[in-house]
Length: 311
Image (cartoon, rainbow, N blue to C red; front, side, top):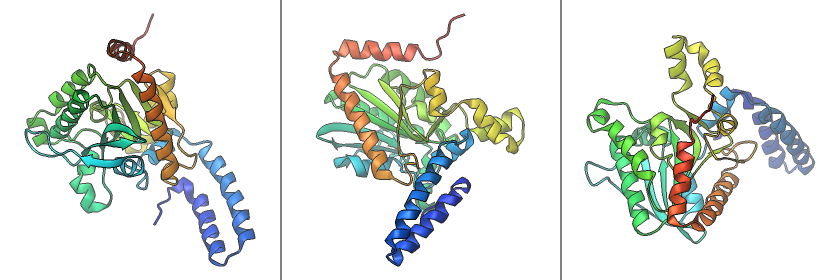
């Protein structure tokens, strides 16, 4: 059953009318409600606040990494474990084919349903997850396979065990190692990009965001708690943090915004997957035209430009 957010209530009612009209084969009514739906979608989604975009990024029906893997990857084979401690289910590593292009796909997976969410640790990776991702990337480099990384996490897991096993070191090592990998690296924020948990698989030749995704140094809830000690300030914090794709693109912190369906990827997963797949394939083709030295130099210039300013 589909889940609707508060600002999607009118859309939900129209969808219910469409279902009822279909049930009695009233095609005239179906056509009428479809037109109403299109107008309501344009009205609702054409003027979303930053906080509403955050809600969409966290929407329970939003496609996760596993959904995209099933939709865009053929002959997908999962890689497990970091060869040091254990396998971390919060990070997926798959090798397979995307439109005939052999690909290493790494994604953060939140999980659906209580049992699966607990298994995936709500999408919060432990250090062994990041070490597994690094192992997969090194394997891709060895066999000259492009890498696609899908970011979707509230943040790296802050538990005692994770800290004991070197959470910050694992993230820092990924940042360092990914910067010099000699194959095309493309990273896309598909939902929630939280702090170092997102950065650890965000160092790439291209960093893009889906239309209704967010990328933040801290969650708006954490920000409002630290600055104001007031949960009611979450909307204010969301706006102040500048975490939406348009804000980040304007500050040149990301390269592109992927035009997922206006109604959201959670209502049209197939189209969202097609947009993501085409972006990956187009950029792999362009990056393949560069020599290794040109690829690494371009990545270096891109990364060192982050946060640059002049007085």
